[in-house]
Each structure stands twice: as C-alpha cells, then as structure tokens.
Length: 178
Image 1: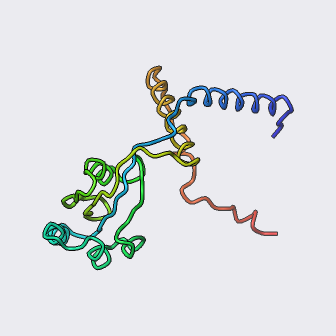
Image 2 (image 1 turned 60 degrees about the vertical axis):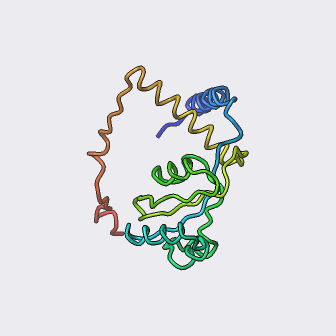
C-alpha cells in the first residue's frame, strides 16, 4: 500500500476537524446527571418474586432477603446494593422502574431478560458525572446529533461487505507449508 505524507496529513487534518467539531457541539453537555441509588433482589421466576415482595410488604428485611434469595452474586452479600447509576446504565425495564420509584419505595416484581427484580430506591438526586461518565454523555450527545443529521438527509448504509467476508476464515494450505 502506498501511503504518502499527503495522505497522512489529510488523515490528521480530517481527525482534527472532527475533534474540533465534536468539542464545539458538546461544549454545553451537562456535567451532572439525574441518578438513583438502588438495591435489588433478582430471582428466576415470577412466583418466587411475588412471595419475596409479599414478605417485604409485611416488614421483612430487604438486606436479609437479598442475601438469602438473590441470584445476583455480585451484590447479594451487600444487600443487593447497586450504588448510584444514571440513565442508560441498566436494562430499560429495570431502569424505568427504578427512576419512577420514590426514595424508600419497593417495586413489585420487574421482569427483564435476567429474571425478576424487586427494586428498592435509597436515593434520588442530581449527581456530578465522573470523567468517564462525562465523556460518555458527550459521545452520546454527538452520536444522537449525527444520527439525526443522517436521517434528515437520507444517508443509507449498505453493508455489502457482510456477504463477502467468510464466516470461518482459513489460511490456504499452501501458505501453511514451508
């Protein structure tokens, strides 16, 4: 491949323009985000979730039930604590339920692809984004803008390469022999 100095300059020129445009477009991206602090109990089926929900409504301790019954091994020993999270972090069904709850409320079972969750919200506030979260928010804002512009002007993407790339590539036998 013949990659010249002019090609390299053109590449970096384009990258710099895109970077400057990105910075200008996302300069007003908020540095805070609405977040909830929640804990949950995850079980396999609805019947079990309903029994646990009933026990919680009768006053059983959420932390004890999470340790006893939750399938989420990453947090069951900490009472099902998920910490603070913003929108776009959890699967939509879970996230929607958590953001609708008031502090202290416990949700009825919420079905997701992982199973059935019982969610309790411990906090709900506007919180500062960390550096990674802020960069992700900027990237999402830029991507949303770009997708809207593509739709507006009717950009069509043709994935013709997908039908031409081998499903299981292999090295020709003659290249393996020395």
